[in-house]
Image (cartoon, rainbow, N blue to C red):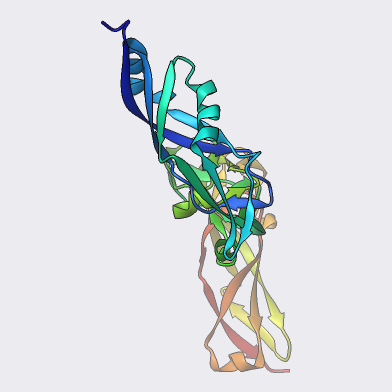
Length: 290
């Protein structure tokens, strides 16, 4: 029975290609169409239930596009649609109709804008591990092509959401850029960014560092004159780190006379380490008469 010819209607998703570079399609025409066809029974069954074959492409390179009040318009009649689909649906003996019988298109000029990329990332670290460098990603900027009403409102582009848990080794991955609710109206110069996170095993260490005094106008003595810097240090560099790699400073201004203590600021620290705290964060002082 499946060798016999039957008539049926099959729905197909439609994609579009080869649009002129200076235009963007602001409506999808009809993204789903119905095709009435005659073919052998087993071919019709395959067409109806093989999902990966249920998409047809329409080449817009020869479309006659005309200016209109709101941009540009064009249409594609059923005869030309059948020409294109006939080569894609090879088994069909006859295409009897297409619904809708004409596809209408609206276009707008393409506007381009370069905007920064923002990472949308959440992560947790495992045990005694830490990120020992800033999270790096490339490219940091992307060029967006879209209609003017969209490009005018863009200040940045986010990546798709990433959730990483219990990290205990360095990470290198690619993440797609998000297009939100305007996917059909936006094109990016790149579709993803490469992310690098350097993660190493660390240990907690403390370094006692003298506090220098900055400022003009008075001679001071501070108490205490040293602080302890508590930080997380990667094991790979721990043997090479010493207190001399750090420096701290308390700054005095004439307006500081009303304050009983001066805040201690970290002036220098080695790369790759993460400072957790400075103990104490403030020092007392006395003014020495000249």
